[in-house]
Amino acid sequence: MKMRVKEINVKSALTYSESKRRYTLSPYVGCTNACVYCYASDYARRYREMIWKSEIIVKRNIAEVLRKDIIKKKPHHVFMSTMCDPYQPIEKEYKLTRRCLEVFLEFPLLEIEVMILTKSTLVLRDLDLFKKMRRISVGLSVTTDDDEIRKMFEPNSSSIEERVEALKVLKENGIRTCVFISPMLPMNPKKLASMLKPHVDCVFIDDMHYRWRVKDFYEKLGFSWALENEYFERTRKELLAFFQE
Ligand code: SF4
Image 1 (tube, protein in one colour):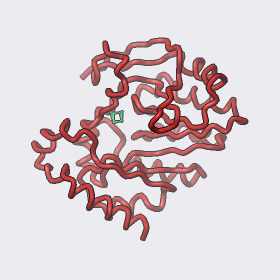
Image 2 (cartoon, rainbow, N blue to C red; image 1 turned 90 degrees about the horizontal axis):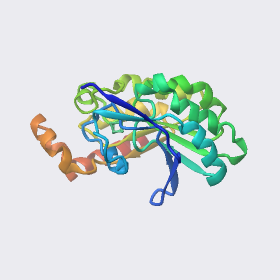
Image 3 (cartoon, helix red, strand yellow; image 1 turned 45 degrees about the vertical axis):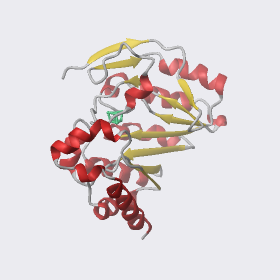
Image 4 (cartoon, protein in one colour; image 1 turned 180 degrees about the vertical axis):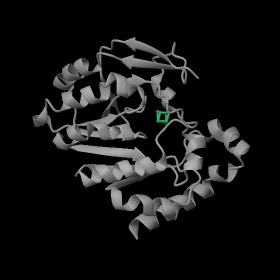
């Protein structure tokens, strides 16, 4: 499907999340990774006119606005991103995520903790900036060990092997790395944990939110068992045990 790109100017860059007690920063609204379970559109209600999955909104002045927001709001913790993958393919062209990181580097005394979450190896492009940041964590979402499963659920993202390799490179370069096993897709937990364990400093595990949205998709693939509570509980326990071994 061809993606329509719309450029806009925004008045604010940082959004405070009461529940998470942190700010979020999304240079784009919309995401071409096209994960079947994506619920990022829930965070984008103010962009009601947007056709989710066929349109991407580019916040072209986000870096300039971020600079003003940092001075005004003095954030402690910023998460990138909730309404997109900050390293989805369009970032190659616009470099808004990179420009935002450069703005954070203008404020070393504020010691802002930045956490990034992506499914893309484009994140390695900004290794030079991460190395200059004092409080940075880079998270890769790795939801299964099986790249055939990844292709079904996250068709336009980097392969599992590439994501694990990205974590390895980041860690070797002294960057704090996290893996988000969220949602837990069908997997071999032992294999996944052994692939990731040497390369991550922290692990987040979560089951599938809004299961009703993906129920039909799972059924069609014959994976209904992997949407049951029993599957999530067992897999979580196994992952934790393998990571703690
Ligand atoms: S990477 Fe995140 S924001 Fe993008 S489609 Fe997947 S779940 Fe949605």
